[in-house]
Image (cartoon, rainbow over all chains, first blue to last red; front, side):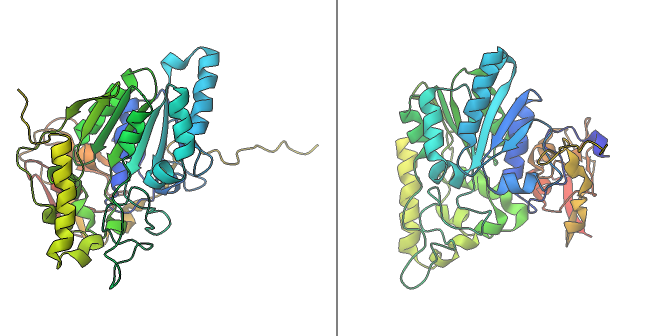
Length: 296
Length: 88
């Protein structure tokens, strides 16, 4: 039976049941194909896919430190260029949201600035899930994490998500996109498109984490989809600095539908004012990216 | 003369995680591929976090229970409701 499974990210990894990151990682590497070299930051993905002495990866894959996948990938890309075979090999750097938005941002910014021909993939599970759900720069507003606990004095995380796609666009790189495991074919399309473009590319994929978000493992797909349908995670594409594509919403769902199944938002469900603040974030996204406008 | 030591520190064989039979992690439910209304859309293959679903033509899809952790996302994504979660 194992022979029938055609994937470059093999089963037997130690991710939790229903892991969104494992879904996204497989979509990315299978779309990129066997001629790919991956550099991975520290994080859940690195830990669960490379339990020594085994690995799930079917392509050359390297892990060095928490912050430097972008720098390592830059070196790999330069070496391939020197050998004259860069056009035959895809180089991917990947990390979780903490390794991208906080710890690895310096190396990532350097990679964007130097313009290496690399696809950087951020698996956004909205906290440091590997070490026990500490808040990161990409943790959403009012989420309960172990370092932004909810209680009498606090409603959870105080700040909204860091606008990583906009930071990427500001570097003047040719392709920036957000995706979600709620739309697997959209992830494949965006990875394919990114790899067809020469230059530095950035894709941020929304990946639910059943353990950290405290939802049932079988809801990973539904919750990822709801984040998009409520307007909290707009799927957008920038090419050469211009917003070229957004996933339009036919009907916007109220944010409660997204918040309800998740334990990390349990504390605000009884407080309509707190939910309203999250609804405002969704409304702002819908306005900013014109998510409701139908194509002419 | 001493035997040369093979340096393989930090290097692992591709796909060697197949040695971990994570199917034992399942606790309550497992998917049942009914193979009746399947339209071969491959969504179950795309969404499986383990990557243990396989199949080609309609109604041929199934998963490898040696690795399936029973999360149930294949049943959630199936547009034809052709996958059911059943008790172990």
